[in-house]
Image (cartoon, rainbow, N blue to C red; front, side):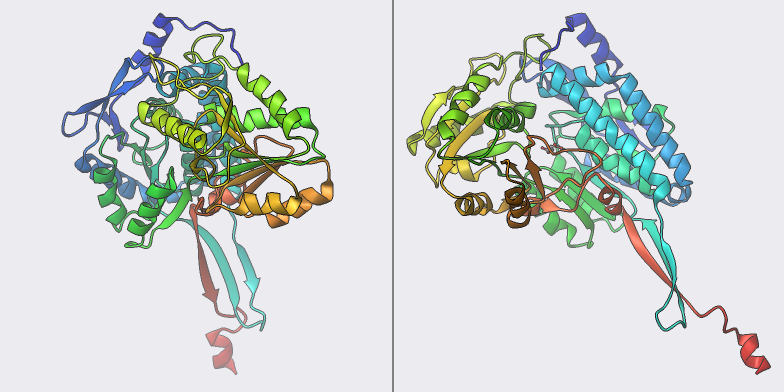
Length: 504
Ligand code: SIN
């Protein structure tokens, strides 16, 4: 996970100078109507990276006006044209991978090697959906009684609002924008205020790729509620897609009920990582490190609870602690960095309080357990063992580099523990027994399951959760359906015409 390329302060300044920092509405870059800007900071140093236009509710309305105006024409644009714009955007993001990676590292903190991984992941949604756009299809059939014909067509849902998170600033945006473009929808994107620079750079790419004015409108803002609430109430908006916490998602679903919006919600998780007694332990350790430390643990799919069979707990824990101890916490631009800072002080405080609570409840600190003194919001890679049932850390999303380990005795107990949560985004299980893997696929309450794999995310697969982890799927064949309505046209039997009747 290390990177050999050295990034200089001059490289950073040059890149930041190339990123436009205005709002993008109706194909125009413009200042916020209030004239206000907000500061984007580097979580590794606390220093200012850029000042970005701070959209007001009026700017939000202007963005939806533009999306609404563009919708009819965009829906009529040939699928091949939409596909080619996406493909050009894929090529441009790929050609500018270093710029995107550095932007994410600067504003979000992850090591450059991880950011490069996200560029490949995020760009792939553009390529995948460029390939899906021309394959949108319908059907024509004869009704069972032979009398009528049934025509079923797919139509774009209409203008969408996207609210995206800070943890994967590129991939969480392309995962929504790409299927919307492919389906023929227009959109307003509100990126996280902590990480708007990647979305700004991506918007520049779409402009260069030839996306018509009004199709994508970008409104970074620090007044998320004030700007988005009126849009959600506006009858011209037809879809809301949100990635973020279950708490906020629940409120957005309630608000969306007023206009009966289509919603896609990628919400919180509490992923169990189960290691069975027959698992290949070195593979389970490698998978556990990936599942826990990808994105520094700041992922809704991060392994949140390690459930390890008691007969292999010591072997697994010893090797896992050794690997966790090998992480090097440093600013993501440093060649030795393998884990960056947490995104802000509030996130670090939450992680600290979960660890402190677990220790009070009787957990043992096998590694780490503290914040790293500043600058920046670094936290030590941490392993806790003997975490008792009921500890808050087993129930809440940690969103940091902390691995709580507990043990189990039987498969049934592991399944019960794994399912004992209101969340159901992803589970990971390591086992050599195929039948057990198939039983888990049927018994675990989850949207996604990794078998002997520490990462399941893939643009060609349907990402999403059950229970309070969300609604809808992103990516895969399913991803485009979220942006399509089904229209049915009933047609009278073409062989029975009025003139036939008259001739009789
Ligand atoms: C997330 O954590 O929000 C998404 C992670 C992924 O796509 O793998």
